[in-house]
Length: 370
Image (cartoon, rainbow, N blue to C red; front, side, top):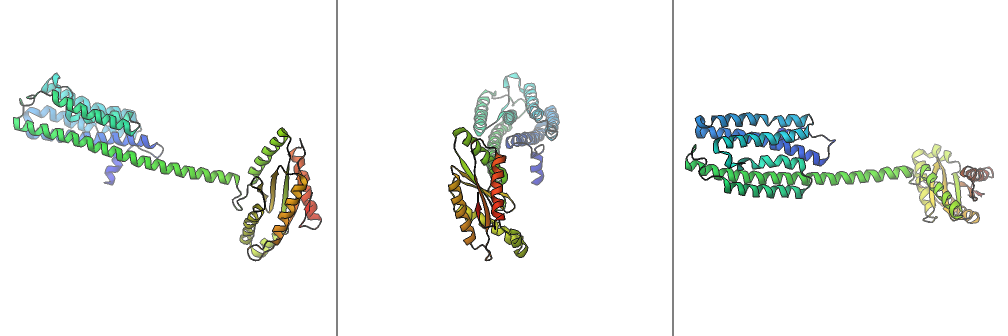
């Protein structure tokens, strides 16, 4: 079963879309089924009358073998040529044989209608509705052909009772084959649609994860420096355009290296994660907290003047100092606060902010300066 599946999958790759893989598989399927159908009918004609039907038997055998070239074309990624080839190899020999034995009036014999139309489906189909249309057209064409085949066209070569058996057998065979192919095609579509939905969901999750990593610090969940730069730039542009104001807070944990040295970096990381939760719980939804680097953090306060920002910093400082972190650890932080002046460059604004924080460090730590 695995070898048969790999035979139908010949020519499909992971780089192709589900629809392309489906078309290639159906072209291969049409070639294989058509080839064995030719061999089956050649054997059938040999049992009926070898001396009369030997040209038909030879034609069926040759073109049955030539149908397998379709697999070679698909393996070499010449998929359009493969579809055209399978169409020619299933259509032309049938017409030629029937015209030779039954006359031009018989036209396209119904035994191979499914093989003449299926390759066109593999080339042009884009949806289930298109497949349903081709399937319905195939059945309608079959019924029309049945009504136009001369009643005694085969009795010149075959006894009446055998003609009746062939007639009903071929009709049942063709209808059954059409139904089977239609069901297989529908199952393939359902499978690929399911795979497509699953891949789409996985891509969406991957996109969301990449977007999150692009804006968040992987350890603490706070915004990373890149995202904070974007938010600061956006707020700066808005401030200059609408003559509004904003403030920022920068704080650095006091003597945090001693915690890492004493308790280990895993404990230190846990403290940083808990710290962000503590800080965020005391801010507005429009405020942004970002990890600036190491144990240094910034808070963006849109629409906040300096005296309000100092109050926020004092509140956060007090809350950090009173919090008992995991392992019974207590920490403090030194805060710098500044309000951006209209038209001030970020470089100058950040210099004032950074100087305020180092002033807090120099004055004994665990305090707010501006």
